[in-house]
Picture 1 (tube, helix red, strand yellow):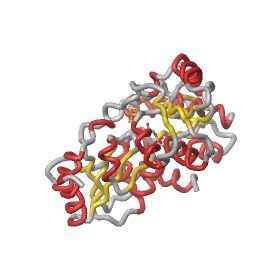
Picture 2 (cartoon, protein in one colour):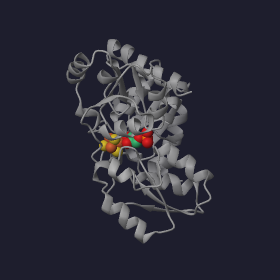
Picture 3 (spheres, helix red, strand yellow):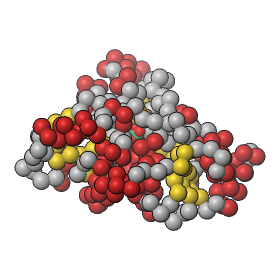
Picture 4 (cartoon, helix red, strand yellow):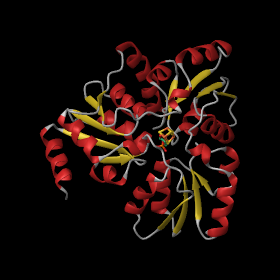
Length: 303
Ligand code: 13P
Ligand code: SF4
């Protein structure tokens, strides 16, 4: 263990802290985290932890979610400038306008959204539970889905629900195109192709399975196949290799890298634990209270 890693372990103990990291974080950060997972797993961990301090290695909306779900804990986002461009593609005023146009619709927001958007929503979802939750909403009601049009179209394909989408997208998954998939099929004819639902529909339909990052991990663990092409952010390959050292993983493209997720580093984790860096998350009480309604509905409905 390096000196920096040792210092982080000691600080973590003395501050009774827990380190939560998304699977898109750099390998060194994943390796020192207490829990590494997808957006859903991270929200469950944040909700149940008894630690005094949560150091979040991910992006803004994830740390905000942790703080809203567990307001008694102090939450520090290790990299304060790590945002999610998709979450910033819709503002609360725009959602309010959409709601007034479709007053009989329920609002389902992807967790990749700001606290203000969650506060305006009936239920939140992640990519691993969106289909399940949409299927549980009253059939006679239409669904306004924000901000990810691709995850929204995936939910519609799977549930046949009447839905209205916002024109949001993840700039990283948006880079995936059918040529990349076709090339991977030619280069790796025996591989299983796994793709994230944030990718465009014309790419999803060319792959074998459409799975969230957490679902990809579970799928690979129990599958007999040896070789996989992974169509999502590259950080997940570290998680998959670590969990399945005997299997082979190929990134669909070396360009699928989220610059915000890659801001994370051991130094920023250390500074967050010391109290000399990172951002202490503080969501205004009225917004946090309304946003916790849609988040708790999500946790309830995904059981
Ligand atoms: P999941 O962790 O739910 O698969 O979402 C991926 C993502 O883009 C997070 O920003
Ligand atoms: Fe946002 Fe996409 Fe980065 Fe996830 S991978 S944080 S959705 S920009």
